[in-house]
Length: 357
Image (tube, rainbow, N blue to C red; front, side):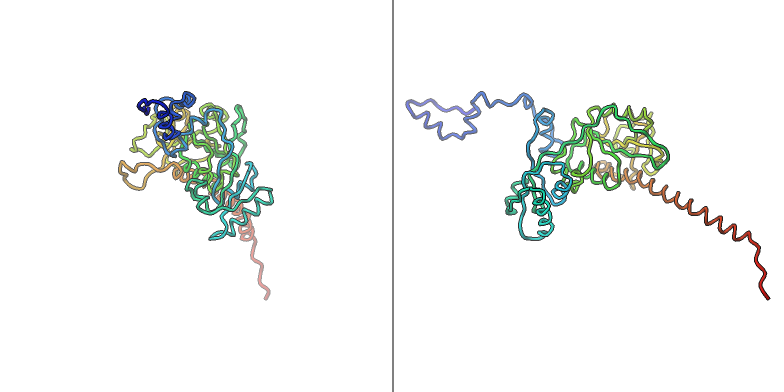
């Protein structure tokens, strides 16, 4: 606290007038730190300042507006119509103006006001993010609540297999966005995140997903272990993920560890990815039937003995979903081969007709 020497007369008030307002406000009892901010700050985690707001997001404080940026996120948000859009900010002229003008026409057709802005103003509006000349003032997009006790039948046959991606405490917004983009591209049936200690669906996530977050359903489960238990009782396979052997990740002796290239996708599966630093929690890992790993192509140094979670998600998902395409092609070849063989056999069984002399 800044203390000033006592002076006589009107000199003290005049001296206080030259102090910054922020220093004077510290002495007031109404500006004490909120209870949830008491104590030391949390340790820095991947994702920067967004993760420091997770404590406040756990309270019932809802942001009224946020700034969405980027061509694809803004265009897909307008097309999906899942957010309330207050205004569209547009940089006129320059490279890429034709694509921005198309977004502006879509906004005007929906009754959204379009406000031209200079690029420097857009930079300040989205705090230096790559906005491509387009920003929108929108309402936040929240994940859908996963209903407890929801029943999903397994179905019959290989074509009824489903693949759900379960994300436990993914905290980096760019990792989450990249995972959502990959899951959408490869055709994952559902994406479910843990509600606690997970990155919210922020504009950074939308930009990292190339706008995919605006059009796909992302669910949030309050009790992730309970969800895994319920699906396992319905006959689903719970497949967790671990680092490669020797990477320092604690291995479970009672749960088999299989390379993703050797994994056989023969029934509906939950693929569970863990936190960027610590991986799967012990409780979630104990519920897995099998643990998938990615084998490295060479001996690794201790500093680079694992993959980024979004890169690992792409490799794992493709190694599983590609089995669907391979089995469909194999099934198609078998069905086409049957009539061809029958025609050849019938043709060969016929006796050759005698030639006319």
